[in-house]
Image 1: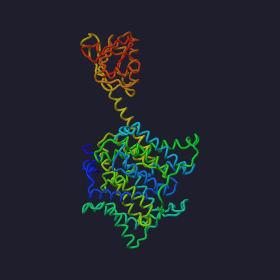
Image 2 (image 1 turned 180 degrees about the horizontal axis):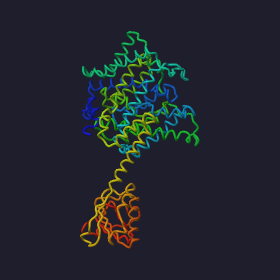
Image 3 (image 1 turned 60 degrees about the vertical axis):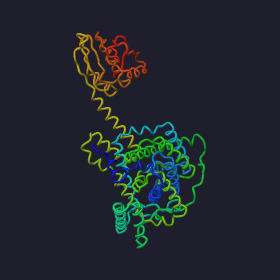
Image 4 (image 1 turned 30 degrees about the vertical axis):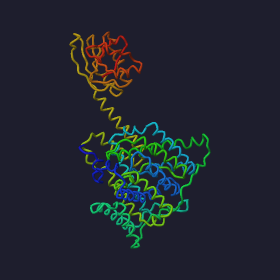
Length: 546
């Protein structure tokens, strides 16, 4: 494709000068922009953190503390300035079973262990393996996540009903709001989206999402419009998070309970964080930082577990809000975390007056900006396997979870790659110039586990002359399956009383085969080819392809 989806999105949100702005000094204008971006993110974090706490079956403050602590620590030491982290739904859906069976204290212990595993992944630089995620999987990831964000907002159209066990919040009862109230909410949502879309065309003094929230909130309060507000979800008032060692027995039985959850949570958290890191990197033309992000996420979760938080990871929606609002450095993420803490400590009465419709409007604009619309246009222009992977990852992200979707996408992409390479193996047959009466088979394409069956079918030992030369100049022997295929071929020619020679074996293949205990190689004994050797099969010595 001539132009990537991510590049197009970057143009829409005016990020062409990201790299330069990272090195910019903190002028008063820059500080103002970063701070206002952080305020916008903090406002959007409140309903998300409360909602995800409900999903996990814990008190709202457990989600809010996680959003504050994880957001602050990753903003300070994360691998990509401008990325936002906090409590997420991908982790909450895993936590709910643990909380229901064993209680919240086991959740805190699990979050600590989860963080330790993530720090270990960063120390051993396992984050680099995120490079193995193909581009179609990335497209499916952003599309699926955009749909998930959209679906998550639909809960705001439900009637609050059942009291939460914490006594401070109300759960939705599953019934939709009356038609009139839905119409009011949709009108306010559209007004918010219109402001976010149109304001940047007039001025960029104030982040558009913040202006949308402020104007719509002023309309609701000023005209006394009856519509759901943040306070209808929960009271966000609280104190500073306090240090707390999880009250669980320190024994093997506890480890057996929390370890499986910790492994799954650590994997999901790192996958979502690293994919978000890559997404922001694609938009901003930035690279690296994967291992640093692993350590930051792990450190944040260890601290969060000891301060009564539910843990978290990177949030693509809030990261896009931050970027679109002008956040370019760590200051915006730090500001978002500190504003969130201020809301909890002193500003809850005002934050609880903000209409949910304004925040839903912001998230709907995030959905529009996150979804890779260009992927729909290129479906007919890319290989059908890539199109299938995009659709598959999108669907699995929506119906299952992100980690499963990415694993499935990578596996399918790898199988498609292996199949395509397996079909590349073929030979060119000619008579040997140096050895009269001999036949030369020039192998083209990689020889590996997927192509060994096709490789064997290329030869006809009973019909070939007494001397057959197999030339690997345009091939490569990749793995043990390839070695075994050569051995099997040699045995077939030997059974016919014929000689098989192998030619053009490069040093790197020699090394591979030597490690497998298959041969001893001295490439100097073929002066014409220098890096090549001819071996008689009857010596029992084989080599790998170029």
